[in-house]
Image (cartoon, helix red, strand yellow):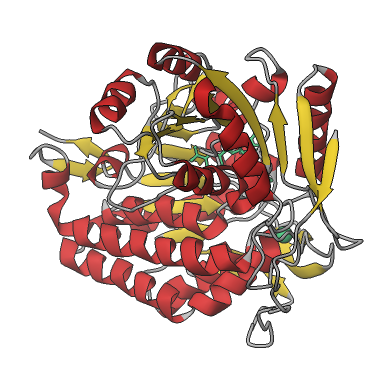
Amino acid sequence: MTVEPRQALVWDYAPAPEATDHLRLRDRYGLFIAGEFREPADSRYEPTINPASEEPIAEVAWAGAEDIQRAVEAARAAQPRWAALPARERAKYIFRIARLIQERARELAVTETLDGGKPLRESRDVDIPLAAAHFFHYAGWADKLRYGVVAREVAPLGVVAQIVPWNFPLLMAAWKLAPALACGNTAILKPAETTPLTALLLAEICQEAELPEGVVAILPGDGATGAALVRAPGIDKVAFTGSTAVGRDIQSALAGRDIALTLELGGKSANIVFEDAAIDQAVEGIVNGIFFNQGHVCCAGSRLLVQESVAEEVIAKLWARMLRLRVGDPLDKNTDVGAVNSAAQLERIQELVQAGEQEGAVRRSIACELPDRGFWFAPTMFTDVSPVHRIAVEEIFGPVVSVLTFRTVEEAIAKTNNSVSGLAAGIWTDKGAKAFQVASALRAGVIWQNTYNHFDPTAAFGGYKESGFGREGGPAGLRPYLRVVR
Ligand code: NAP
Ligand code: MG
C-alpha cells in the first residue's frame, strides 16, 4: 500500500469553522405525531452523536409498535381532509415548508453536518437548497396532477410509510414527503438511527407552516422501528431508500398485501472516461463522483472505467488531485471530505478495502492528520483491479474508487452492465454521438454526460435491477403516490 501525505498548496487555507452558537437544538426530541412532539409509549430515548467527535448532540425518542399505531391512526384520520382540500391550498402548505427551509437553511445545514459528518460546504450548498427545491417543485404539481400522469384522472393512495437512510437525511426526507403530500397522501417518515435531527427540525417546520395535524408524522428509531412500520396495519404504500438487503426484507414483508412499494437501493455505478474526454474536467468529475459526501452516495461513481490509452494520465492526475483533498473537521468551510457517518460504516469500508488488498489490487491512500476521536477514512484509490475483485463488485459506500480499464466502446458498455445493480453512470467524452450510443446501451437509471452527481428536482432518479424500482423527482415522481381512477 502507498500512503502519501496530503500536499499543501504553496499557500494553504486557515481554519474556517462555521459557528454553532446560533443553533437552538433541544436536549430531547419526542416523536412527532398528530402535529405535536410526544413521549414514546415506552419512554425510550437514545442519544444521537456527532461522528466527527463521538460527542452526543441530543436525545431522541425511538418509536415502538404502539407509537406507530397512534401515528397511523392520526394519518388515516387526516388523509381524507387533506386530499379534499382544493389542490392549490395543499400547494400553499408545501410552498410554505419550502420557504421555511430556506429561512432556517443555516441552522439546518449546521445540524446536518453535526449529526451526520458531511462537510458543511455540501450540506449548505447541496443538501439544504435541494431539499427546499423539491418542496417548491412539488408545490407546483399539486394542482396539475393529471398532467403528470398522462392526462388520466388520479387519486392519492392514502397513508404512506417512508423510510430514509443517513447519507442525505433532510434531502431524502424531502424527496419522499414533497411528492406524497402534493398528491394528497398523508405520510409517516422514519429517519435513520444516526441522523434523525434535521427530520425533527422539519417536524418543527411543519408546525410553523401550520400543516394540519396528522398529515406528517416523524418517527425516529432503528431498524426494528422501520420493520414494524412497514408491517403496520393501515398503511397503503411504502417508499424505502436504503440497502438492497433491507429492500428485499421489506418486499417480502409486503408480499400478498395490497400495498404499493417503491425501492431506491444501492449501486456500484460506473464512471466511464473515454480517450477523447477533456481529461482535467473528467478528473474533477471523478473526484466529485466518489469523494462527495465521503462516498456515502448511492449513485457514487465507485467503478472508474478508463480507456487504456489515457489510463496512465488519468490515474496520475487523479492521484495528484487526491493529494490536495482536505480531510477533517466537517464544520470547516474548506473541508472536502468529512467524517464517516458511523463506527459500523467505517468497519464496513475497512473490511472491503482489506479485501481489495488481499485479492491483489494496488492500494493508494492519502495520509492525513486526523482528529483522535471520530470516524475517519482517508481517500483511497485502487488500481490493477480485476472485475471479479470484491471492490469492483460490492458497494463500499466510502471514499474509495476502484479503477478498471477498457479498450473499446463495446467493452466499456459490457463492463458497465456487468453488475447486479444499475443506479447511475457517468460518460466522459467530447463526442455527442458516442455519449448517446453508450447511454442507450447502459442499464442504469440515471446517466450523466461530462458531469456527475448532478441532482435536480425536475429529473427522475431511480434504478434498474437490484438498485430498485420506482422513480423520485419530476413528474415521474408523482406516479408512485397516485392511483389512476380512470
Ligand atoms: P439500511 O440499513 O437499509 O437503512 C436504511 C433505513 O432503513 C434506515 O432508516 C434504517 O434504520 C432502516 N431499516 C433498517 N433495517 C430495516 C428493516 N428491517 N425494515 C425496515 N427498515 C429498516 O441502509 P443504510 O446502511 O442506512 O444506507 C446505506 C444504503 O442505502 C446503501 O446501500 C445505499 O446505496 C443506499 N442508498 C440508496 C439511495 C437511493 O436513492 N437509491 C440513497 C441513499 C442510500 P437504521 O438507520 O436504524 O438502521
Ligand atoms: Mg448522528
